[in-house]
Length: 143
Image 1 (cartoon, rainbow, N blue to C red):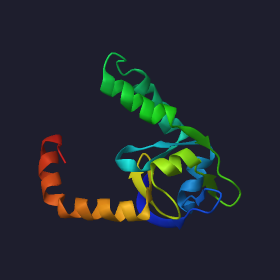
Image 2: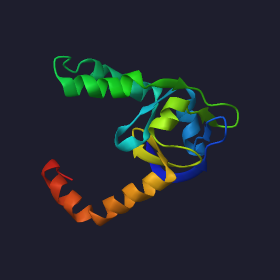
Image 3: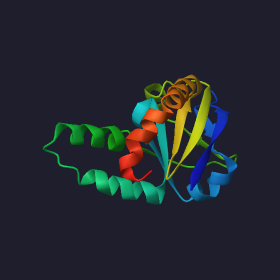
């Protein structure tokens, strides 16, 4: 389970340290891809395979299904954790998420999200301001 918020720097080669407590789970295989809200999503290989299987079954006759599958699948890249516990974020993904130096790695149970620090702070502030409305809208889901 991925939880928590972690602050890191991306180096000039696009390397990002993975929070130490998640390295073992990700060391058996990981995939990084475009996420929603202009962040990146990092999945353990098994979780990625489950998601990719669901995405592959979306109806190709629906434009939004095709677009979402393309966003997630075409943008995906296998990543390996090096001896220092880092992964390399491909340039095209860093560009998509506006990542230059400072990032936040946020644990979201089955995945990690990687955010440009400024974008994360803006998103988090907005969510915190809207938390009552968000909670009320989720009431029907049993949350």
